[in-house]
Image (cartoon, rainbow, N blue to C red):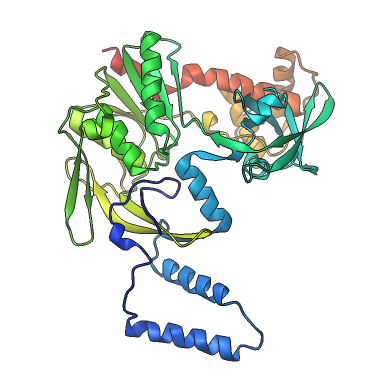
Length: 457
């Protein structure tokens, strides 16, 4: 049995309270006599045989639900595997990143030496089928779930390239996810931008490597982008926070139900002597939670690092994961954490030093429908209107209705970009639209612009 300390559902950490091990022998309280009596009654008298495992799982689920805590859950089989994969930032797969491009699923990138690379997959290939079953109408998440599987097993993937379909068979290998990406800011090459997607086992090492790489490229200051980062491993957050703080500075305080508080402070035990001495700015938004908030609050309150963006999520609790054999585990809230100044941000979040947010059009995830025409009315049409308006086209009122004004805007867009002028959308039109919006975001990311400006002071 193992117990792991969590900050959010998708992360992991090290045991804060190993006494929570579910294998410990405890006395059954009288209140549970009714549970045992009910179990015995069902097993003896129910009109058809029923599995003891099913009854036990139902009892555990009922107990977890009675806590009314969405972060305390009972995970079995695939749900447990998904959490474990997230905890380790590794899984059985082929090493190809899939993205939604208009209404198509396409290969965004291929990892070197991966099964996908060896099989000849390339960026831009359209994903058609997995193991002979079409995924053309599936979401990215659904398609990826079909590609992933047990390490050493085979998977057949059909891709379309230059109007020709081909199927390749690959053996799934252990794939380690890149949880950190980095690049120099396009408008100010002295600023290194580090985007942290989650706090998993390899994240702290990837973060350190990103800092070193950007330093070699000329970075003199850093923007750490935590937007959309739901958190993860406590120990990873401690390591990364320590890198940006002087030794002895408080990172976080963890308080158990008895009110006993453990204070975590920066030091070589966490960062192994690696420090970021350059100026830092941190980007946060409403999806920055838990471990992200620990890092942001630590740097802000213990080092004066500015927070830029919008109010963070506000998750101030810590979870432990207790393994229940190979196929099940319990994730249970066991403590709350406080910022260095003693604040509990649960359901409140962190308030940014400078408020700035993504424009509305940047939050459009994609389109479920490729073909939109005059008279259609849907959320996709509303997204189309928002996107075209962001690029300077007149769409009238953004109301989700494909009227004559929208048709004219689509025709003008198609004409401006060398596409067949039909006044209706298709894959090519939406792909070009998303490409232009992605490029536009590089210049219109107001939070990033504000961060760079702050660092240049």
